[in-house]
Image (cartoon, rainbow, N blue to C red; front, side):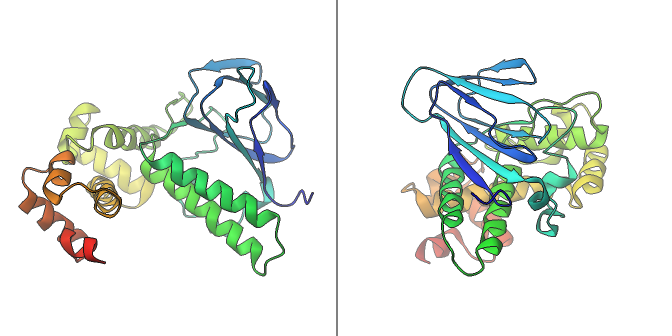
Length: 268
């Protein structure tokens, strides 16, 4: 095996130990798995979640004694993560692969299928001799990280060593993911986080280069597009599910953000 490229391993044994050194590990845990031990500290309630682990950590995943797969481990060589492709991602700015904590992501509804599809494509690419294979691998990895940044509950653990502004942004993004169907205004999230609208906006701007409202609208557009494309619900049902006051306002918002109406998207 070429140790300069990625490797995908299934979690099938009762105990899955770290297999590669000098690699970041993206652990997608599901089903039968019930604990992960990191540097001899055990974490429970890990089903349907993702862990990002630094190369210098020792870890093992423990599952029930079953032949069923409990997910995958994606090993990413350290030099690959230093590629300029990943330089400007939000996850880089807020240190998803952190030295001071163990970032855990609880997958949002519908995302795990997309995550799995990307992992399967990565695994398939590694076994081929296709031209431009490495470029394709980097592109898929970037897509994987963008999904994790934009649509998951990022970093459920925050330590005192975290930068305070970055930590607030992480909490804000988590609140958006959990409350987007109820709240669409920056002020509502600022109140939840016990800060002023201005301070929250300043923290987001400094950390990510966009304003706080952009993150809310981005999440609404992503969920709107997914529901319009992949569900049989009516536009009216989708608008109310996403917390809009009326189908007309939903259509106005969607067209303002995307340039086309919800009905036009469905026709494409």
